[in-house]
Image 1 (cartoon, helix red, strand yellow):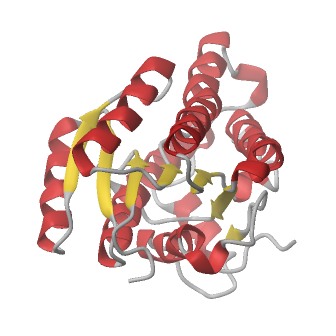
Image 2 (image 1 turned 180 degrees about the vertical axis):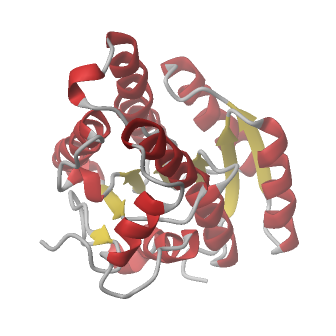
Length: 259
């Protein structure tokens, strides 16, 4: 219970990795503010958090909207009586050849993956400073933030950008006692990867499941990643054990990309 009594906000916490992170942080003693566009899903996760004996509150928000992100942080503080940990988890993927990517596609993914992360950094840091205490900001990058992948070029660009924001924010906020790190998952068996696999099938003619299987076969540990695998690492980043770590974006991918 290393983070017992802390308040954590997790964006994109209605399903997949975000849900896994929210439940792990609750298990480790934190009260959780759940933020997502899908209100019904975060209501369900809130019940799971409460089942673990922790407090939960929900807030429907579009993270690409700066004011909504600020409002989500204010809501977390008001409803849960504090604010200590920000997990900027929400994001979207996009599969397309670089030659075919449209302006609208680029604008949408950058608004969510990059600007959404920036607004979360801003809102959390401002709240920590206003409250006069240290805090932790944890951002979702990816193996695609370390290596650019074919057909995932613009998505890769957004995740490289998250690493850049993480490093810059770590440098800017260190004097305030705020640490900023990122986590870089690989192939996680979630709805997002089902969508990626289907999109590859549509564009390349690969059989359904073929792309997913190909990537899983490249994992040294021999299995796909789970949300729980990612959540365990995020819990470490949220804990006092990571107090001397900032500006980093470690891979948690079972052995796919090596740095």
